[in-house]
Length: 167
Image (cartoon, rainbow, N blue to C red):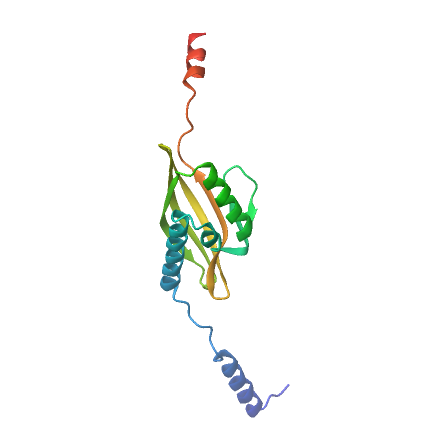
């Protein structure tokens, strides 16, 4: 089979054009990471101000929160209702968190935030770790999933310990 030089040149030119087509825009991962940190800080400020509508608005419409031993909560309305009910049970509770790290996907549309949290309710302090996944929705970072775990050791029932040792 014989291929003419002109056809081969045309094929090479087309291949070069396809390869040199519009490139994907590069994502500034550092800027996106900072945007996540800023969004997390604003979310914390809303929670501390007890503005639970604003706090819950950080979640995507299908965003999921895993509040301890309860069933998962889906969407801002369910999350806001939980925040309000929890605050009614513990009106003096204080809460804070610190972002330890943010990893942004190369695509710039997903990210994972990790950190540490602390709460204090009537002198009972708890500490823990969390993982929050973020996704871009309409160009805005929204929480896709949020889950935390307590690292505070469980309280030991001293009466049970005494019964065991005295038997």
